[in-house]
Length: 240
Image (cartoon, rainbow, N blue to C red):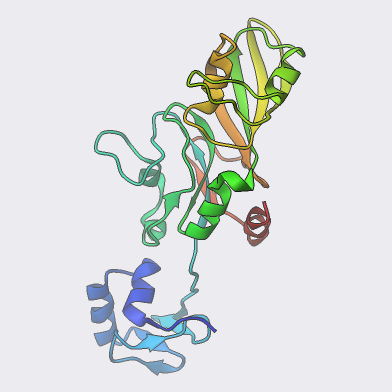
């Protein structure tokens, strides 16, 4: 059994309207609990046990939402920004009713996997330095990256502020004037991937996160597109 909540709060959080609108819907006989129309929008019910109906349609209650976003460039990973477009500006209002947030951040010019959720506990688990959740990036680098760098990244790289990173795994896709690699790290220092390559006198030209823990970016999602996670994906992510 779950916690009892006001009907107007439950329906408002699920995107059915403001509390004032829900109150009006109740007066119009549009909302019932079980088989009975309710007359007061402030009554409390347990939505995990009692069935709520809106205009005869069953309301599917959920406490948390989990969205996989393929973040595009030039969008900031925050809930609001006075100047730039944010990742929440890409999300439908029916999800915004849950007051979601990005679980972690990607730089403004970085693309790729970003989890949008209102599950604060999961966000904390994924971002906690103690958990060492692995994050893999596809990187295009202005410089020649070959096998000699495997050990360099595995040993940790000293950044411009003197911090030595935790061991990272480098995989080479293509070496050349512009090298293409995968880099897996288990922490999230400011501009970390870019600064790791800058410490080796190389510049990152393109950066895209492709996985976080067990969650892998859906190839079918174009930049700016998103979808809900499956129950299985959520379960695996919580085990990351």
